[in-house]
Structures are given as structure tokens and as C-alpha cells.
Image (cartoon, rainbow, N blue to C red; front, side, top):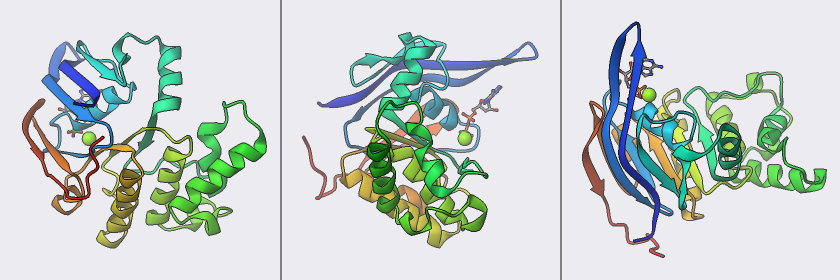
Length: 235
Ligand SMILES: Nc1ncnc2c1ncn2[C@@H]1O[C@H](COP(=O)(O)OP(=O)(O)O)[C@@H](O)[C@H]1O
Ligand SMILES: [Mg+2]
């Protein structure tokens, strides 16, 4: 099968004050390109740890991960930064927009190190903002827009460099149900455009958008449900 992400025997432990805590005990998973995956599980079960390792923000203690054939556990810090810039868009629960930058400038941030003309970058930013319906508010500051709009801006920032893999940690955790639905509908569109999406959620309603739900408990995958969708394109 067309495995885009191969996770094999992943373990992660945290040591604090002489005590070792096993956050991921032995996770083996394969994800296909274009899959729309929800990770569910109780608080403290290892969801954020798993997502952070997938995004190369955290290194595992044991195991291998290949993304698009690249063994991400073997990359140097510098290569990891390059890998993230090309492959990954992150979305967080608390949006993490810079308060003194406009919607437009926040969305431009991931492009700041890319050596391309201004016009090229402007086109990418406008495309990302229009995907999430935020182009008209591009000159607003985060404090001048709603929580849902802030998260839509954070999505624009995550997709501006057109990364194949989108990782979102409880992206609707700080939003009401109306705004949560709007965010999930944007994810649905990105999924239809071919992005691979992995998002963490507590919310049953949000996980219904996914075509695969992985239940994590106590640092292990307890259940892995794949839902066949008529509109799923298998390539
Ligand atoms: N930096 C850290 N230092 C020590 N323990 C941590 C750290 N980060 C997470 N943990 C612990 O690891 C476990 C899994 O955490 P996490 O991956 O954040 O879970 P989740 O996202 O499912 O709530 C929790 O028990 C948490 O307290
Ligand atoms: Mg978490």
C-alpha cells in the first residue's frame, strides 16, 4: 500500500526528578498519503507526544519513523528544520499567532526564510488566506478578530508553503461548536485537495470528519478504525 508515514516500535519516555514516565510504550502505525486521521484518547495518553514526534519537534527514545521514505529520527537539527519547512504545517489549540503582526504578516511567517521574490510570496499568502476565507481581514490584528478567525489564520499560516502533511493538536479545543464545525470543514477541503491530515481531538463530533480514528490510551494504540468513504480516492 501507499504508506506515506511508517511508525515502527515508537517509544518515548520523560524523565523528571529521577522518575521516568513512559509516554509512548510501543506504537506501530502506517498512514497512507491523503488520509484524514483523528487521534483520540484521554488526557495524558500520549497524543501530543506522538504528534510532536511526527512533526520532528521531539525525538523518540526508540523506534523508527519514515515520512515519504525519509527516516526523520536520523536527521540533524538543521535538516529537521528544512524537513518541517517543506513537509509540515502545524496547528495548535491556542492558535499561537503573533499579536503584533497582522493576519497577512502572520501567514507570511513560514515564508520568511525562503528565497523567492515578494510577488511569489504574496500570491502564496493570498491563496492560503482565501482558502480559509480570511483575505478580506488580512490587515486586522489577531486581537481584532474572533477565535474562529484566529484559528483560520493559523490554518492559513500552516498551509502557506503547501506542506503535504498537516498536524493539528486539538485545533477546535478553544472554539465553540459553530466555529469548530467551520474549522473542520476547512480541514475537509484540505483533505479533498490531497493533504494528509492528522489531528488530535477529544470531541466525538470532530472525529466524525476523519476517515480513520486511532484511539490512544496509556501510550499505546488501543483501537484503529478505518471508515470507507465513497468519495475517498485511492491512488
Ligand atoms: N515534558 C514533559 N516532561 C515530563 N512528562 C511529560 C512531558 N510532556 C508530557 N509528559 C507526560 O507524558 C504523558 C503524555 O503526555 P501528552 O503526550 O501531552 O498527552 P496528551 O496529549 O494525550 O494529553 C502525560 O502523563 C504527561 O504528563
Ligand atoms: Mg495533548
